[in-house]
Image (tube, rainbow, N blue to C red; front, side, top):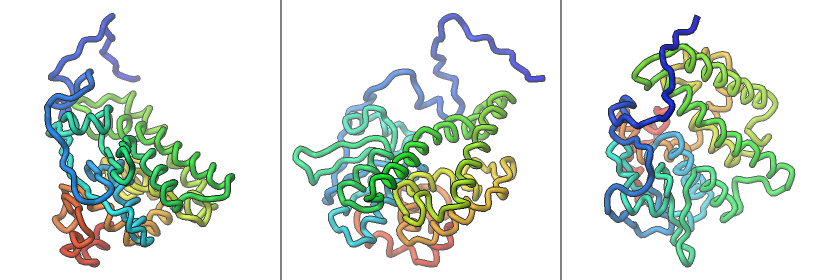
Length: 290
C-alpha cells in the first residue's frame, strides 16, 4: 500500500526553505535577479552553459561541426554556475528568458541571433551549415521526430525520475514508481529502435543522436543518478552498443568535457575559447572518460 500523507492546500504558497539542494535558486517567478552583463569572446558563437546533458548536446555539436572543417562554427564556451544563480543575471536572461542553460548568441548575423532551448540550437546549427541532418524529406522528418521526442522525454527523466530518485529531500514510493515505469518504457522505445538502426536515423549520425545520447547514454552507463542497477540498464543491449560507438568519436570526447566542473581533473575543461584549450587533455585522458 502506498504511503501518502500530503493533502494539497486550496491555494499553494511558496516556502523558500523547501526544495532540498535546489532551494537556494528555485523560485516561482522569472526574470533577472542581478544586473550583470555576459562576457563576449572573439568567435562568432558565444555559448553560456554547463556540462549537464543539455549543455553537452551543444558543445558536442560545435565540436562535430569543427571536426568537419567548418571554421565558421568557432565558439567560446563560457561557464555558467547554475547553483550560484548565474542564470538569473540580466545578461543571461536577455538571451534566455527561461533562465536555463544553455544559452547561445550567433554574432555572425545582423542583428545577432539569440537562441535558447538546446534542441532549437541543434536544429539551427544543422540548418545553418547544412550538415548532421538528413537532406531527404522523409528522413529529415524522422530525424526531427526523434529530436522532439528527446525534448519531450528528457524532462520526465531529469525532473521526474532523476529528481525523485536521486535528489528529493524525501523519498516517496508513488513518484519513484511512476517515473521509473515511464523511464523503463522510454529505454525500451530506444532499445527496440536501435535494434534495427545503427544510429537514430538509420546509418546516418545526426542531431537526433547528439540530442539523445547525453541523457540516455549517460543513464545506461551509470553517469547520472547512479541508477543503472536499479533500472537494470544492462538489459538494453542495443542502447549500450550505440553508446559505445558514439563515445569513440573524437568530437564527442572533446565536447563532453567543455564547461564541466566535476569529476576527475582530466575530464574537466571549465571554459573553451580555442581548440588549443584541449591540448592539456591528452587523447588517452579523453578516451578514458567514457
